[in-house]
Image 1 (cartoon, rainbow, N blue to C red):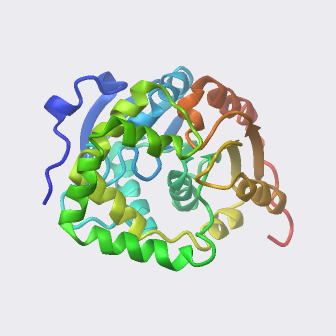
Image 2 (image 1 turned 120 degrees about the horizontal axis):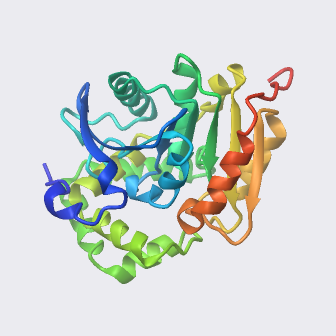
Image 3 (image 1 turned 135 degrees about the vertical axis):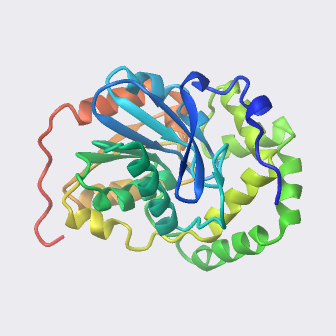
Length: 299
């Protein structure tokens, strides 16, 4: 198995490192960051990212909430102790074990991209159920057209070959290549974020975990249990997003009465990395009231 990130050396300047610790739950050794007091808020990053993605947002949320950020299984410093189940149900099971271990009962779950899909799949299974969920450029729809078949097959073929993750990781050592990859999402986060993405992309185990998640990903029907539970979904959408079409969030807001939407011109797929204060203000505003909107009849 490829060597993972080394905490002693790779975490030396990791964002919010003072709030980091490791927790063993079920078959996973989790890297988590927890800060603040108040209602519980859970942060779930997207595919290929880590807790570093919340560098700016976590301190803002921790000023009001008891906030928990995690490296998802196969990502960052989190290590699966057995064979990784990186499917959407597998991620949900792993997170439920962690939340039970930590006695953490989130009132709000915030997910970015694929993390938003995990959030809406997780929320209906929790007791008590969260007040709501926040999707930041959420990847809540399957790929359309031929990509629906080709993308997972390609990712699976790459994931099962250990030499591929090592080869891709070598490319992660090139800062210009990392910058092009991130800018391809429509975002321009600060140089500090690019430094940490480069560190992640240069690690074969992180790359393998990312490929495994892509290969096993299926979000078809992910909203159905969420809608039946009448949970609230606040969508934050960077209008420059080139990874997930902003129109997907628009369509969901029209269909589901429990979904609110805030458009953010000038921001891309990594909106929370580009302007954490703006994203935090949107979250605070959306959940200032405990009253949740009713679900449309017939949904």
